[in-house]
Length: 284
Image (tube, rainbow, N blue to C red; front, side, top):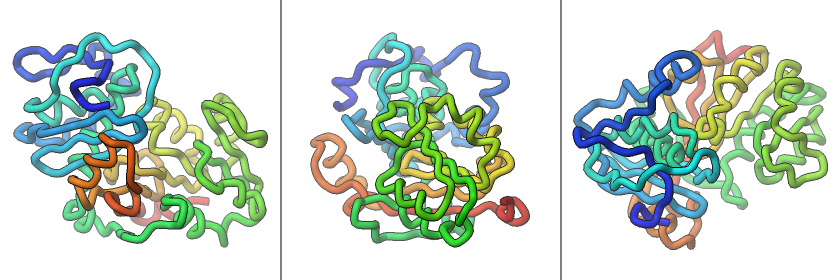
């Protein structure tokens, strides 16, 4: 689904401001900080709300996010091209999850850029695992420390069941499809007992991230997936490792998103990790 076909954005007023009333106090602090860091002069050049993935392309680069459906209905369908990137990033706070998807992609268009992340000491991996998921590599990094520990994973990632061979595994999923998974309200019970917590980046889109991070404050915490906003500010919210993505081929990404064909990870994205500085990284 492209911008001309999408259903769901708050009206943009003539001066290019997208105003989501009531989103300027706590618990919106995380989102508002990320949005305010985007320079005012950057402009959105193109975007697409795809079936599985979405992207926003701006002067500073391209950002991607998993397309999330549902939430509140969309009020209007403005063309976001030509609007300030910071204004479009405001949509990350929308309770229409399609809008929020575009808002997260806008945030990632600013933060998830190689030059910016290299300056922070991020580590890039160009080659992916066979199933197209960098998640396996992130889990492998922690496996030696997981044995017989409580591991909670928010989101049913590919091949996640294998962690149960090493640890006391709990998988939380909003739409439970696997016999061993628990519905996501179980986070209130599971995360405070976790030694390790792996939280999907989509939690930023559906607004559960602030609460999940609060519940996991005593765990070694990883936020993982292409939707993760690679900002070091998230370390201050208790994230020990950010495991996300950067767009390495914007043209290929656009083709894959718009046509629903191709291998996103192998052809358009590179994975990247950014660790919190010590002593935050030694929790758990």
